[in-house]
Length: 196
Image 1: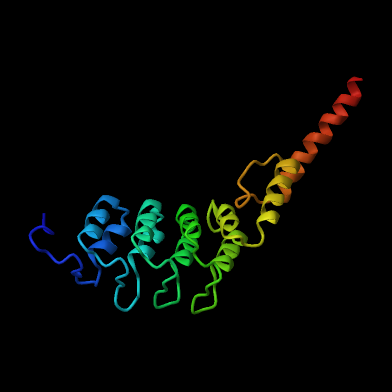
Image 2 (image 1 turned 60 degrees about the vertical axis):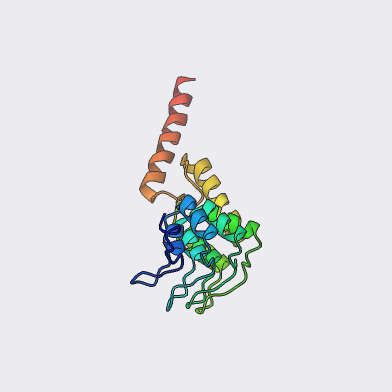
């Protein structure tokens, strides 16, 4: 109704957010569609940070919002002040779905942030540090190194210690836990020999 009354679709608030950026940050695709139809600037960036609606949607993991913005002409590889692209932002937050949408639309995974970090290097660090439960999936989507090693670790822990966990959260148990498990197995074998 405000648009019909002549409201400026690109008016900024006190923090320099446009209505489209705010709607995108919350994944409100219906509101976004109305704003875009009303002439919202899909590439408008927040002054200072350089944040765009696509980056805000990617940060929140709002896949439909990401797709809508790209279909409406948002620049997939635009960078904000720190050099981050929407893909780097999605990877930093381990937003797998948003990253997949961006890559489907040919986002460049080789672009580096001002500090030299790329989407792949960020995903590798998250995988190594067990930063998120879905870090292995994120690394797999981005094509980062270390995915095979993480899956091997999970398989080894399951086989040796009976631990079932994700490839990222899998860790070898403490020496005490392993010793207890082994002593139970040895005890079972001894008992079997006595009874035979």
